Amino acid sequence: MAFAWLPGALGDIAHGAATTILLIAVTTLAGTLLSILGAAGRRNGPVLLKRAIACYVEVMRNTPFLVQLFFIFFGLPSLGIRLDPLLAAMLAMTLNMAAYTIEIVGAGLDAVPGGQTEAALALGLRPRQVFVKIVLPQALKIIYPALTSQIVIMMLESAVVSQIAVRELTYEADMLQARTFRSFETYFVVTLVYLALSMALRRLLVSGGRRALGAGVS
Amino acid sequence: MIEFTFWDIVRNLLLAARWTVLLSLAAFIGGGIVGLIVLFFRIAKNKWSRRIASGYIALFQGTPLLMQLFLMFFGLPMLGLRIEPWTAAALGLTFFASAYLAEIWRSGVAALPLGQWDAGASLGLHYLQELRLIILPQAFSITRAPTVGFLVQLIKSTALTSIIGFEELVRTSNAINNATFEPFKVYGLVALIFFVMCFPLTQYARRLEKQAAAR
Image (cartoon, rainbow over all chains, first blue to last red; front, top):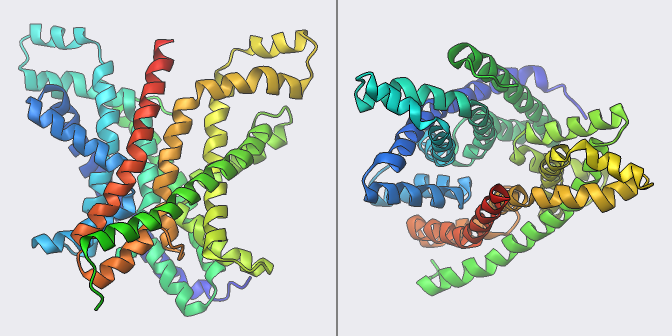
């Protein structure tokens, strides 16, 4: 074990970690938004939309993220859609996460008692207002712990996007070990960085959720 | 350039899928055995053994599987072991699975009423007998749905072993894609093969969940 290379590599590691954080931040926002739309569509949309969303969820949940990533990055250009690696990674991560969070958000929507909707309608709110102002906040509060775990899982899964040359943490590790020939030490250090990131992310989400939603997460 | 017909592609992918299945099974069985040991530590009466087991679980659940595989692949040779991609893949996935399975089963043990332990003790059973005859059978039976669900996750996770050079479905598909330049078809087929493997299990897990909820 030798760590003499480490001081010179800190810049690269920090840069990679920053990209990983960017990826997960974008995915969290886009994925959550998409899954709210998806879950709402699956409950109240036309039959065809409901079926399409159900199919989408099943396909994404039953195939590996790596294959989805390759399909988007290598496959879409043959349809004339060429994506830059970072964009492809964001798209793949968002689509993958949404498949899981559509089910989570949906469970939350189902858990809000129907009386809440009736009461809000009786107060003269329009259906859209009822959803956004009454049902959704309560649903998010219920599912917040599950959503938090899914976000952390997605952060860990993002290591895979190094395979399409997105310069995130794992990619930087690959480059470093090729330069230093200290493969084990490099991946060991980067694993610790991931561990710290996932713990920090969980902390941040828990405290942020408590402040924004009053959701009790331990 | 080698000519590949559609059936050549399908045949080669299916042949490679055998390795995906084999690796999934090996990791599930190995992970089950190691996971059982971790579970014993996790629910032991000794505080330190519980802490060590939670640390082990947190470590594997808090780091990317890809990193765990790299550490296996590059770390074991440092201990003087000659290692093939297959060994690194099987060991890496085994430890990964053990942490998740131990945590799933622990939730099952925690869900049992404490009276079960008391009843076991009052029948004169000692600790291991209590676990074997009373606690674990019930814990396994109420966690059957998440265990099957995790198997699906494990099958999908085998895709990552392509990165450390294990010749399974995804690595083979990369090679075929490099020869045919038909990524849409090749990766579409790979996704389909994974779907065919995972979907029945997902449905089975869902049915178990419904049964458990109905009980």
